[in-house]
Image 1 (cartoon, rainbow, N blue to C red):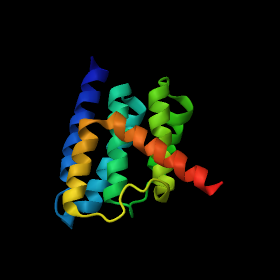
Image 2 (spheres, rainbow, N blue to C red):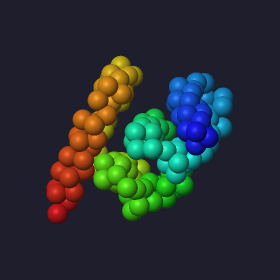
Image 3 (tube, rainbow, N blue to C red):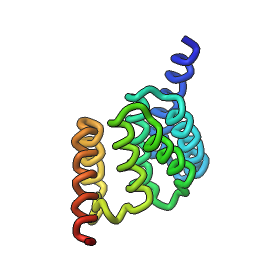
Length: 147
């Protein structure tokens, strides 16, 4: 019961921090650091659905804040790829890890305009599995073009 309570509190913090990432730049560094801490905690302690949600939020965070240092998150994703019990989580963690390291392989945005970005993230929230499938296909196609 205690673990469930901790997970629910951490998930609530993650959701609130995710919403706050759109706040003014005044506290942006602090918010990004807090989001990173919570994502790392949930990657270690979260159940499959929570972990999948965190992975999706990491991708969105990277898209919105590409300059942030994602080295700690990459290490956590690498652990998920190597050790997680769920093949789905391992696959999504691998895609996210590749995106953090090589975003140019995914072509998520050619020219980002605000209206398109809002629609894009709404589509991701409504159907995250289709989003991961698209990312996997983009990665596969770009890797095949290189060879």
